[in-house]
Length: 120
Image (cartoon, rainbow, N blue to C red; front, top):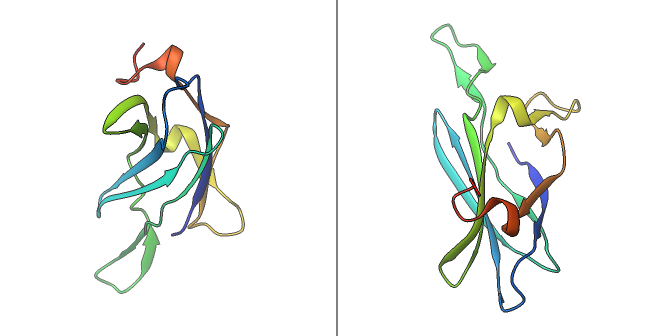
């Protein structure tokens, strides 16, 4: 399904230009990755993925949820900050569709606090 997630990249060095936010979604069906430009410290990334799975009896179910979502802020090949989010803990159904999800809280990646490996 198509999902757009907004985020902020905080405390990027002033020398960083053309930063990009890359979002990687790992599902049982495979990995989906999308990238968007960071503008004024903010970004929106739309990541389409499917939660459908068919059974032998012909029914469709929503049981192929992603395991995690990884977000990175990159410029000129250098990772400035990354965060790995457990899907079940950090995302919820939009309510309008059981196949679209949103973040439960604001997404903020702080270069000064989290660093390139997400453990600063």
